[in-house]
Length: 309
View (cartoon, one colour):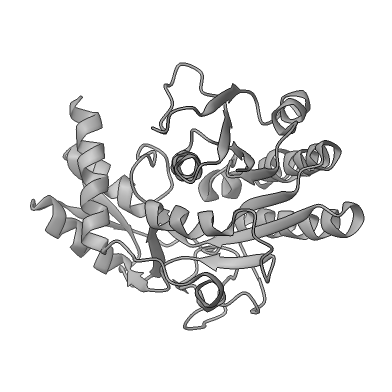
């Protein structure tokens, strides 16, 4: 099987991807800071490589001998990119270009990039978005992701580095850092577990495409080592849920009453983003999706266990 490197292998999606790749028999290396944290993935026989994404030397060492590189690390979130757009440019965009240079020098066969389907299409007022629709991001986070997608095209044209961009919707689930400012579901569940009110942006009418993280990685693994028909895929549930529907689902799962406080919607938030995943399902088939209440239940159990542990 292939030698695979997951940049951000101890993160939310990256750790689940490490487990899935190892389960499929690939030789997996997880690159991350790690530090004092124990690995969040559970697969045995995974090579752990501690390093800094912002170190070119560490990236050069990480990609040596690898067949496939999965870039699932971000130095910013939508909120931090919003507060300092230059940080996203200096760290995410510029350092990803250096990572691509390292991959070219190491002879990597294909590069898989975790882009965004939630922010990249912008406010175009469509029922859903396919890969052939224009990308018109209005947030620094989405602009940075689109910039990297363009650099992937450059490196493929200039250096022959094959790549696949994965426009991921709104993933949620276990191992997501509930104390960070990203992800309605884990943030709300943590607030409730701490006896605090849930913050709702706007009236609750905003619609997003939520996908359980283990469903997401099941979409990714069939693409590994395959000469795919396209170099860009939407990955999501293809189903839209409003913020109100998410909060109602959370209420059913936790079984307790909780306060909800409304705050203004940031101007760079779009009203509706649902991904059309027909390109993926036509080529790879449908992945059975975890029901929303079940995914939230699993996420809630982990968060409650961490707070009580």
